[in-house]
Length: 143
Image 1 (cartoon, rainbow, N blue to C red):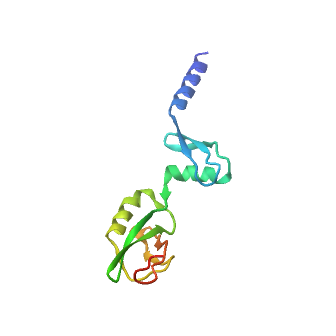
Image 2 (image 1 turned 30 degrees about the horizontal axis):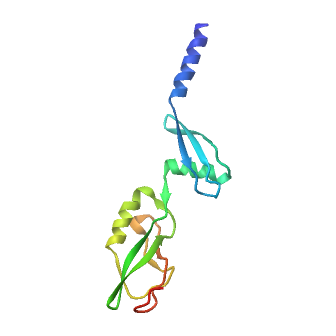
Image 3 (image 1 turned 60 degrees about the vertical axis):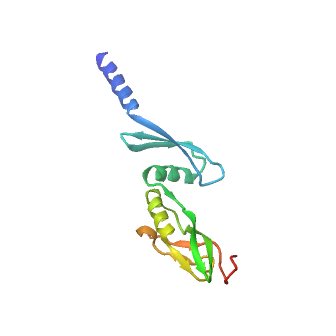
């Protein structure tokens, strides 16, 4: 009898070591709220995903979250200065976002550019390029 009580107590202790974290999935239109259970800091169980991509998203969000960075960069063309919308070609680690913004903030482009042109290659050593989201074709023309 005493041994049974000890096992129940051990089970209760192990259950209390678990942590549940809720993640809102953004990989599909369902926007599932996924519960990730951690046991001793390791992913134990993933529940609530409505599609195959949800589990992978939730695990990645807890281990190495990534984001696509969108912002603007200054372009000097003739005697005018334009703000050119840019984005990372692929997501970069969330921990590198501030450093990438500092690099972009200091950068200046000169002359025309086409949508899709690489304006900064391998931003912060991530292996991801920053690309133009719009064209600046000629002086006094920003579209």
